[in-house]
Length: 526
Image (cartoon, rainbow, N blue to C red; front, side, top):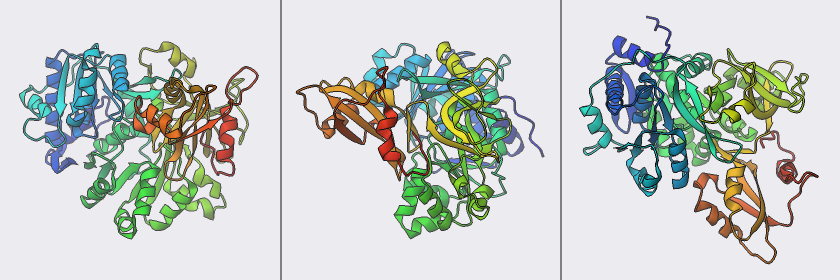
């Protein structure tokens, strides 16, 4: 039986609950829910939010590691025309405070181990009216489970539109503060439809959901198995033991960052053998070092490798390098295609544009990558000026990434106009780190750059010039950052040097700082 075309985020969940109610839907930390059970939990969440006064245009938020309750809240909020803001659980307290106040969340779901972070800033959360605590395993005393049980189930409200914002995902911006990317039902479902190529689910397949749900690669990917009625195994963390457990539970399709693959290969032959059970290994959110990709393809010859390139602003994937492209690149005399981002997925148009003139460049020439697609976000929450800077009047999204398209249509992402660093799949915006380091009393000027890292793709390096007569060690500067930023954003190394290179207008020449580290690399990623 063919499932009807979905128009709202929870449509397919309701369909499978009606047609295959007793089939497995999701497994998490030893608990398994059927489609009927999971749908009932979403309906109860919907009713609970409605009873708290949540309606169209409101925002609720979630702060925890991966948990089915996060997906349930996304679905439930969407049924009321409300948006779900998923906050990065790795954030420091002031970062959590900023995101929650920026999105205006009225209800906040918080994992037990994150409660101390919230309690420290509770009196500064200007919109939050209710906090509901979530335990990892739903044991006795779980506030979320008690709230669900006491809630009256409710369905989608009639006023909800497919163009209502259903997700707010935070992405770094030009001020060094994160921006809330507003994604609608229509955006997310277009992504499910267009990025579906290459999966070809078969009976018995299970999806491993290990990417963090605060990342578009986690929340968007989660919609694939829901769309197809395929069961999922969700891990709380993407650590080796959790991933191995998911595979042993039958998961054979996954999407992970390259750093995880590197860790598996380094663990030993038993881990390599276990991961050979994967039918599909999709990677993205960070560049894959070519030696690592070649080693993985050799270790798992029967696994289909897919690479994806995309952005939060297009709901996830925009281009894909398929499994056949991986296998045939060398045989066809185009080994360079292994470092390409593949070709645009359906309904995605690509232009390569001279950022200075706005004119298209020729085939093989470098320029800024522009995208046009129904997946394109609605705008940055509360920031119309920032939205206007990246969305043209005729609907093109200026990605800020530099690249080219070859004669056969393969897209190469080779640099970024934005000072964004991608380390292990995490987006790190340089000005945010620079803003913290500049507050150190010994620092006169600072530039933060991404440098190659064979495990993480890139790592954060700070280059600082100290004030005359001042002293500060590398360890001291890194520790200072850790007091104010999430650990993954902090520099892994610091070079203390003389005055930083600048152009005639006084702008620090980051390209000059980066060049020594990236010379001879197959791919320029920052």
